[in-house]
Image (cartoon, rainbow, N blue to C red; front, side):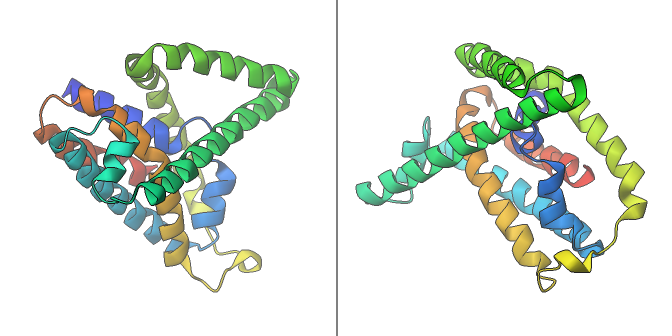
Length: 221
């Protein structure tokens, strides 16, 4: 069970951690649709759980150790595969810059320290974690993500009674498309994390447990 919880926390951290799942992001994809936004969150959580389950099964059974190996299972054309890898790398880099910039801005807003200093601090912390490989990521996630989940849950419960539809931001009430877009780009960024967790999965049956637990936590937050 410890293995399941540990892997789950890493996945949750990748999905909602480090500021990338910002309030503005949740507002844009779900909150503006009012009650339909809640349905979108529930469906999104189920789809994320299914995708995680299917992906981890493939990674575990096919002995996938990197993104290129994973793509090679579905795309045999080398040129197309290289283009997709390039796009994924760009998305990962952009998301990292967004996280760093968001952390720096928050540092300046709450503490009054220059945002550049805050960004440098986060960069240094990331370097330390990255050099410790996946074990460092696991330790950091096990320490930070539980607090993150608690505060998100607390704020969500506090504000759920205020949820409403804001007509000014309505996009033809297309909450299903909005949910699918959110699901798609988040899962693209999640795939490298899932692949890196391959060595941490000692029993195949734990994959289903991880997927269910992620679904429950994401939907409740």
